[in-house]
Length: 435
Image (cartoon, rainbow, N blue to C red):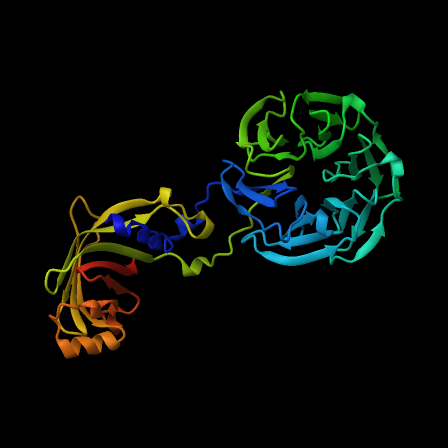
């Protein structure tokens, strides 16, 4: 059975709807590696899932945001582009906008779906329509004392746009109602250097702030201006977002750690160093709703096993089923529950007919009962002709390979057989679950 264990994974692809819906976490963690690409992890466990794309396309990965249209938007600073990806399959969709040589870093959406892009080189913020058309800068370069607009740019609970000044160690706000940009957080307030990440607090009172140069994590209350240090001594903290459990995920050096938002204590290392090159941004984004057509999932069922032919008979003393994992990216062999289903007997009668029987009764079985019926070849091919020329009992029985079925009365299920020269054969029976 060991040789065929991996083939049991095929059975998992036809798991019932409950298994398809099974997922370890409802969100993914996107970590932008400036020198690598955007890497995708399980937001709950930190397990690596995949790279969003290669560095051939994403160069200088910066902000990652979920757009109002359900697509993922990624800033590629070195190519001066905003790229779009599907949130269900993570497949590349295309370029949303070419920003020009502004050094794009941060990106956010307003309630109307317009896109705001921070320009590190242009020292301003550019606006784009929902279709990607450039609408120009929303304020003059360096307004409000801004220098080095960075990727943590975010709308605040008051409706203003807050832009971290990396080079000026401050935060500038832009009021969309008046069009005025002004200083919101003074340079080096609280000892900060190289302001990077801005994350709105869950209670709507302000922001969590990361200061890369000074290694700080702070909480900033907008109404009072209070800037309280939660943590010092971090190694170049940049990206910040909420983990699914409500704690903070913060870039610390070349990794990502989980931090208690109340005490500032490190709770766990979520992404260890070495997985991402130059992490600068993190985003926890809920997975898109399943697009699986549930009407096409439900009753399919597979039974598999292997044995050695004895003459014309293949007796499989232990046929197996596998369940417990899910389709596509969620497929994990470690999650499979492989169980004995029962026995299967396949007896060759002629070059095109056979007799099939099963027994799934007793304690060590699935309890499907017992039965059987006659089979015919689904397709006749050159192997069938070879059998007719040499006879059913010829030593070369490779002609048995292929699909067999019970005729129109048993349409909807069938048998696949793959036999090797020494007589060992693998049999897969695709059928349906009992009602």
